[in-house]
Image (cartoon, rainbow, N blue to C red; front, side):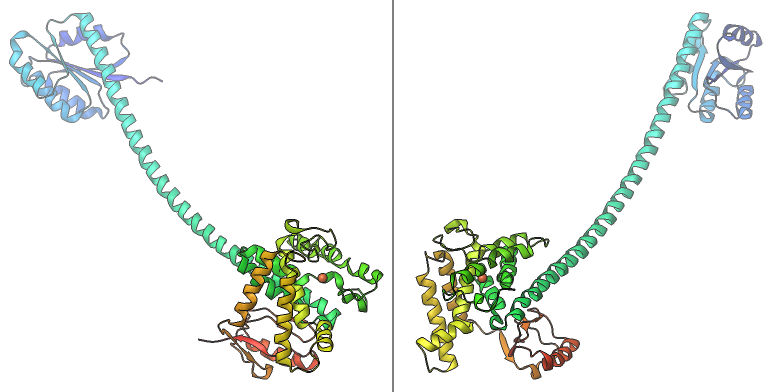
Length: 447
Ligand SMILES: [Fe+2]
């Protein structure tokens, strides 16, 4: 239902009010009439509802129109106000206009059409003002709601960001633990090779350490270094199952044994290819017997076709076989050093291995790998001491391993950087009776 505006007419003459009533009968307003200013104020006071428009005569006894409208303005400031006045009341009219008490004046006697039109226009003006105020209030309220929402949103975003940061930290730490556990699992897995063939004890670990040092010298990134480390630990996984002589691959075996031996790099890859995260490691294992000149196996790759990690493992493998593995040592002892003490023997073997590496540059090995290898070997000779050797009986809780710990049988026990807590120390000493721990134990020097 449309809103019905209230319009009040004020005049001291009842006949005039009557004629105004007739004039506005058909308009859709609620009409009020009052004889004189005081009666009008009494009516307004008792009404309790807003009036949209007041039309008042100026010349009235007691209180004139301008005075009445000034008082009515205090009660209903939004009401539109029209003053009907004769030319002789010009001073009162000017004062009322200047004080802002009336919005329009009409001369008496008025023209009916003019008065009706003026009333309609003022009612429209009233509607516009009221609508404008309503929109202003709405806009203010919505602005306040927006500010509130924005503050809530900012608080929620900050809270959510904190949750995400905390979750990320947890995930990173969990991921690091998983990666570390995975590497330790691979280390333990690698020790199976050495248990299967005790003559290879420590070989995988040493090849892995040497390969990691060369990777770092060449400048490979951390994830590549980790792949090489795992591939080096597992490079001879495929050897498990080969019988006796097949371990020797120095050309001493008959062709059929050599042929079987040459399958081990591909079968090593096959053994890890279904393990997540080890597919790249499998490729490195597959190519660890490829030669720079294309004479290796299983694929006869050459130069840049061979993965860099495989070339690094290949060089480390050869170096360790010469320096540490029994067959080579026996051969050297037998042929060139029948009676030397162990320290001199090791130095001579290292020299021999370095010479072999240089000779095999461009033949078996990439010259860049050989170059990095020789730098690492020389640095090892003059390395700053950061670790010390202790016997197992002297191992104490709180020490930190500077190298991974293995049994003499090659079984992996604890990783590098592991802190020897009370429980580990007791377990190690107990284990030593059944499966002797490799000594000395290397621990970090405390500052
Ligand atoms: Fe191999």
